[in-house]
Amino acid sequence: MDTIQDPQFGDILDYQRLRDGMSSVLDHVYPTFNLMGSMLEATRLFRNDPNYMTACAASGLAYMMLVAAEEEELAAQLKGKIFTLGWTEEHTGTDLLSIKTRATPDPADPQGKRYHIKGQKWLINNSYHADYHSVIAKVDPEASGPRSLSIFAVPHSSTKNWERLDTHVLRSMVLTKFDIDGPGLLIGQAGRGLEILQRMALPSKYHCSYMGVKMVDDSLPAAIEHLSSKNIFGSNPIQFSNVFRQLYNLAQQAALINFTFFRALAFSDSPFLQFHGIMLKSWLLLKCNEILSQNLLVTGSKGFLKESNIGGNAIDSFVFPVFDGHYTLNTLLTYKHMQRYLAHRHPQPQRLCAAGRQADLQQQPRDAPSALFRLCRLYFPLRPAHRPGRRPLGQVEREHHGSHSKARRRQRAGVPLQSRHARAQPRGAAFSCRAVESDRQRPLYQRHHYAVQRGWQADQPHHQRRRSASRLHPAAATASPAAAG
Image 1 (cartoon, rainbow, N blue to C red):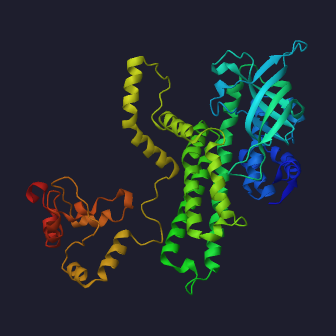
Image 2: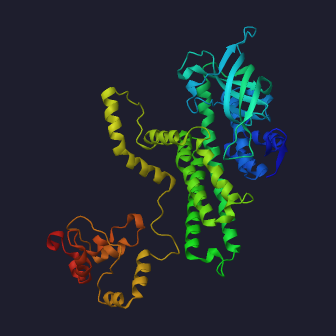
Image 3: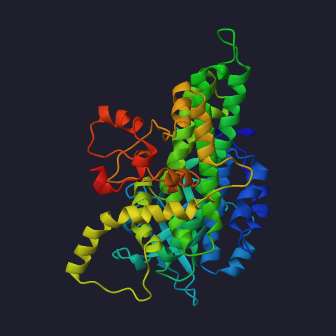
């Protein structure tokens, strides 16, 4: 999208255009909260431009603190303003409990809402052009626990000494460090800042994942169009088998992450909101990074031009996993909450002693595969055994083998068909030909291994398995395991 030339910061996005669009975006946040509606409205206004979308998301998420703290009067009054997320300080990063910004109560305010805020914030988006800053500060500078943080709405007039920080990503945005020295208004209750922050941070994970998915949706068609029109070696690059195969795989992965995102969004009205959000931040966004990076390599030199969104999206996508907390923290939270939401939950959780907690930690790695399986079942339900209008799998396999003369002769003789994908099963297993034919009607994930279906033993050497199976008479397939041994 279009940028403007600012005399102080150079080429930046049009913040007046952002301010004009924030009202319609926030209509989906207050008074009725509609997370997907706000993201779709931002897409309509800013056409998925990463700079505008990120600036809009940062402002909207900072405004959500008013909604999360149930400050309805203040939320209605400040609706449509540009906000910032004033959390980070240069020496702390994600460790918010170590911030040094201090809030001193105003003795002239009987309601205890007005404070004087003093400190410094670092790497803050929208900070110079924002109307208000959602600032995290400590009322007691010596406190260090979860109840030591509070959130304040600080007007632009209380900030000064802005210094722009150049970054490798989202170069049209203005990220600065600045000083705060002026009045601010308490949001919610003192000491409840971390609780309000956690409520707001859950939707932010969906915002970041949505932008990553949209980057993939924009970049892949651009790469396909370029490789379909370019002409090298007398042909279009997309006609080359290796290029086509890579683009096909990328398109399949893009379809998967789209499905996963909207599948997770469908559960966002339940306690799964927390688990699904951190799962999207820790896995889906990393997958978006991989797809966009590989897409850039497949595209070639065209993707590195500034006019192309292929290279820009690949680079900008790396900011979203660390937007509201580092990628490694979200990965840790994914593992932590996986057991809680996917394992069998008890109505009354038991409090474990130190020995019990140690035993539970030792058991968690063994329980992880079953929890992962439940996660896969949740997102990808089992398909039906047979769909109308489709030929059974056994019929397709028989037609494939019937095209070969040797297989056709064996089929006429009544010898079971051989599979090149045969794998071993426990010793002594054997199945009848009738069981084999009926088993082929099932989906792949329910079928027995071909090796067991053919009747040969697991302890046979590899060079003897095919020979013994090819000589197997249909009557021998019905033999008992003892007879087979």
